[in-house]
Length: 135
Image 1 (tube, rainbow, N blue to C red):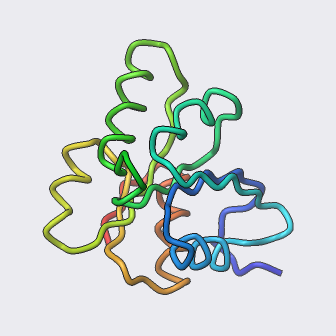
Image 2 (cartoon, helix red, strand yellow):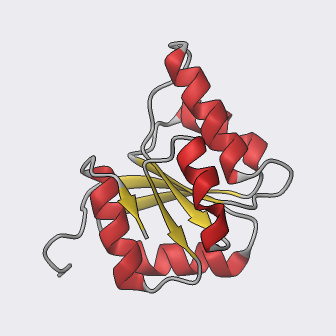
């Protein structure tokens, strides 16, 4: 049984090239009603979103050849042009100084790594329920 306040029945896209980030996210958010799509290259996010729109995209700041900020801006641009759905985005940052990047790219929320499972779960709940979160 998941604790109260945890988002249920969601599909989450996780974009990261580091195994430990993917493991931290999937371990913290796994449940019987949660599914994941894992993307290891930033440039692959847009076609994946077009194929199956996630309830949430969790984007690492560093994702191979195209980072989380660029991916977020590309998704926002496509959505504003009506070419793609609007996707809720939680960005995983490397340091406090990167917060301005998350704000500038219009991410719905962000966390600075490292984070614990409870903090990630709270941030996901806030972003999915349309409350902007910063952590």
